[in-house]
Every structure is written in structure tokens, then in C-alpha cells.
Length: 631
Image (cartoon, rainbow, N blue to C red; front, side, top):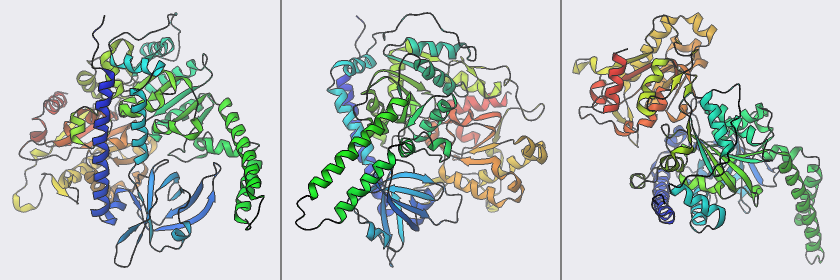
């Protein structure tokens, strides 16, 4: 008998305690930010829209009361963090600049540019909101997601039947069960992608598609879903973020699959909206009839006369007919759809109540807390996970909970316990061989190879694909006012390195001059400037704006944090590392998975700007520096 690991129940109870610590830490951080952080700073961070103009108030197609708000902003640079499903709270600012919050929170239904539609709970004083001067809206602490995760853990701990089987299987070393049939051949996939799809089809319990950067994980996953749908009538597809759900949904729609997206997309365009539940619901032939019934119910309620004996009967009769129609529309939509797509937390949506599925696909599984993955697993009998645990980890704010293991994902756990269910995709189609080689050696046991047509890709002839500009080489006299040492800025001590930011702009300008303006514009050569620190990102954006030289290339240069570039790629990537001090302190740059993401965004050229004397005290950066120097 194989050795049984920790008891799954004890391990999950421990997770629940760690999640409780994370919940309390995040709630406390939110409270402090709300009380102490200035309004302008919150606006800059993208957590507040202020001032607001109020638009229409109406009932949406799902019969929820919503209010439309517009942000009056002049600063296009401010990216905001509002998206479907996030909780928000309204506030007003009085003459003395005090912020007064409204009692109830609401939920974002839809955001498009500077317009947002917010779903409000019953009994929320909309008249008061309409009549308030200096109105704003702020992201609120996300109590709901935690409730769902706690609830999922409790259900899994107490589970019987299939869920208990999966729980125990994921925590022990017993081999997962498989079907046995001959391998299918897919002419447009490479050998490891084909192997991954076959493993998905054979899995009775669980399998993992491990996709390093540029290896076509999404292509493989779409193929696996498509093939699974030849054997099952419907599957559930989830991911941690709305963006990841949109991405896979769009690829499935392109493949001709009927997708029903629960929740609203982050990028609002007609193609994306056309497969949302809300839009499909509205387009159903019976919808007008339902709308008329709901309107009649509101009118009967609004015109109620004292002593009206028949009032309740009228309302009940109308409600019965409305509910019946609603169920009919819902059943029609669900019976047509082949893929139901939503976030992990979104799988608790009311419209999915009572639905069961044979297979669940979780994309970006390495970015989700284990507790979040259990939310949809309760609805299915087998699980396919796809992602890369050598890239971005889940966000955990409580350091003690992180150290005690909250950051360990379900995907990592299964990779450790069941290496036989993992397929590593080994052929990458993004990077020049030399950019890829370092990442492959360090993170993937040197198993990733480059496809022949990208192996030697470069922009300039005889160009070196990777360059490290060592800022410790620049010595300025102390009285010059120029220093490449990092500084703290702002209330929450963001780190910034102004000289390094200016050098980044200078290096980019020099590289552009070598290529030539005409070629950059004709070939649309694009650039990503990455910094792990948000304060540095904002400073770099200001610098870019100031420089006349970059005006013609406005749409080709984007500047963001590592997380902001997740899943993306650019011809040229520049990384401003910021850290420069005498003690060799590098803070969260020690999380090497983030660096793996940053380095592997580049197709043809990678330029790192960093103080080598600070960074190379860490073995990873020392190895990287030596590797680049030797090219």
C-alpha cells in the first residue's frame, strides 16, 4: 500500500485556519486604507472613481436593480481595478473633505471605459444617492469570495461520495484512474500537446497540462475541451480571473463552440458580450413577455390600495407566470450551450444552482488558492487543471499564512503527489532560443525547446538577444544630485529608482534609433516596459509622456507591473528592477516565479536594467547576470 500523506481532512482544516488569517489580514488592510489613505491616492491606485455623474436607474434583464455611473476624469493613464462581480461602496465628500460612506455595499455588473453599471441591493436609498453632491464609488472588501471559499472547504471536509473520493485522491499517492484506448492524432498539434489532449481524454479523475511560457497551453486546452465535447454534452470551464475566462471563452467561440459566459467580460465588445448569459437572456424570444410581467408586478405593487383583498393573489399569480417563463428561458440557454464559462467564485451563481457536469477545466490553476478551486469541483466528477506553477502564484497578503502554506495551490499539490498525471508542454513558439534557454534551465529542467521558426528571431542583425545594463557602473559625484539608489515614496512606501527609470527611457530611445522610426511603425514593433514596483511603473509612465521622441510610437509601448503582463508578449521587453542598496536587500524580487514571467514576455530582445552588485548576491540573479554576460 502506498504511503498515505497528511490526512486530507486535517490538511484542509489547517487551510481553513490559514484562510481565516488571510481574511482577517486583508480586512484589516482594507480598513486601514479606507481610514488613512488620501482620496487622491486611492483614485491614482484605481480603487476609487470620483467625482461621479449618475446616469439611468433601471432593472436589468436578470431583474436586478442597477444604477449607471460615469467617472469624470481627465487622466487617461489611470487604470482602474473595477470589474464584474467586485463589491463597491458609495460615498460622499462634505465641505470639510470628510468621506461619508453609504451603509450598504453593491456589486459591479459591467464596466466599459468611464461608464460603470452597478447592481444595488433591495432597500438601498437610490434617491439619496441621486441627490448627493460630490459622490464617489470605492472598491469594497470582498466578503463574498471568502464566504464561498470557507463554505467550499467545509463541504469538502464533510464530503461523502465522489467529492470525498477526489479529496482523498488529491492528497495521497495512489495512482489516478484512467481509461485505456489508443492515442488520437491531431495534425496541428505538436507531440507534447497531442500527448496532453490524449491524457485529458483518458483521465477518469484528474490530469494536469503544465504549460511553460509560449508553449501553446491555451491552444492545447481548447483542443482538449473540443474533443471532450465529442464525448460529453456539456463541460464547465473556470479560471481565477475574469480576464482568463474571457480569453479561453473567446478562443472556444472562434473554434465554433457554443459558450455561455456567466458574468460580464472585462473587455466589453460585441463579440465578447454576445455569449454572456445576460445578453443571451435578453435576446430570447420569450424575454419581452417576461419583461411585461415583471413590469406589471412592479405596477401592482406601486399602486396598491389599502384594503385591497385581491392584491396578494394578483402579485402571486403574476410572479408564478414570471418564474415559469424565467425557468423556461434559462433551460433553453443551458440546453443549447456546450461550455459554461465563469470564474471559480462565479460558479456559485444562482443560475448554476443544481447543475452538475462530467468535466471541469480550470485554466490558470496555479494562480488560484486551493480553497477557490474546490468551489466548482463540487459540481463535477473529474478535473482537468492547466497552468504553470513556475509563473505567477496566487496573491496572499498575510505573510504568516503564506509561510504556513496557504500559497500552495491544488495544482502544485497534485503535481507533487501524482507526477504521472502531468504533461509538460515542451515546444515554445514565442522567444529567441537564448532568451528561452535560461528560463528552461532554471525552471523546467532544461526540457523546453524552441520551435525552429522562432529560434533565431531578432530585430537587428547580429543583435545580442539579452542585455543587462548594470546601473552600479554609473558613478556620479555626490553633489550632482543623481543617484541610482532606490528610494521610498508615498504613504505605503512604494519603491522607486528615478535615475534607473530615466536610463530605461534613454536605453529604449537608443534602441529605437538603431532600428529606425519607419521600420518600427511599418512593422509595428511593440515594447513592454516592466517593473515589479507599482510606484516605478507610474514614474516610468510619466517619463514616457514627457518625451517628444516617443510621441509617434504611443500605441506600441506599454508600461506595467509583472502581473499586468501576465499571458502577454512583446517584441522588446525592458525590465527596471529598482532595487539598489548597500545591504543586497531585494525584497519580493526573491519570488523568482515573477521574474520568470517578466523575462519570458520577450520575443526578440530583453533589456534588464539593474544594480548587479545588489542583485547578484542572490544565486538566481548571479546566474542570470553571468548567462547574459557570456552571450
